[in-house]
Length: 222
Image (cartoon, rainbow, N blue to C red; front, side, top):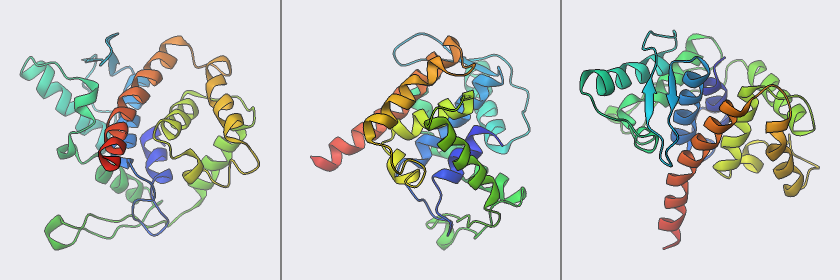
């Protein structure tokens, strides 16, 4: 599975609805991370990084291919720059729905179609729990000192960045203090074969994902 698939599983309840806030931002960030790892895009060094399109050929996943088509149209077709922060708010890409449908096609999730003309979005109830169980076991192993891969680093960083770690991985972090979880995530760079370039991309992704989350918190508290 792609990182976006795994993030979607973590942020989706067994009955098919959204389990935790900010799923849209998390899935979008995960799609970008997948495309970076596939060497389809890269981020520049600005505070709000721009995306450079390296290769627009499809990767075979509906969400990622929709993103590549969008970037090709904007960057190549119209000569416009695309900021990472702007990309996180493009709902017309329907990355969540495309990812859910891909998991449905793979036999992992069911599908309850949208209702009321799309006002109530589709739901994706669990059909085959084994992939998510394996994912959770893998992340629990990493949090307790196991060697991480790039996917683990992206996923745990997004969970931390959206402040959903202890809600989504409640069972997996049981017995660990918040400080221990924080230290485990901060040590990801020095464990495994992640490398500085991927770590930098992860940091920029998480910063971009956190920005709308922070705005939402401030708005709600104001």
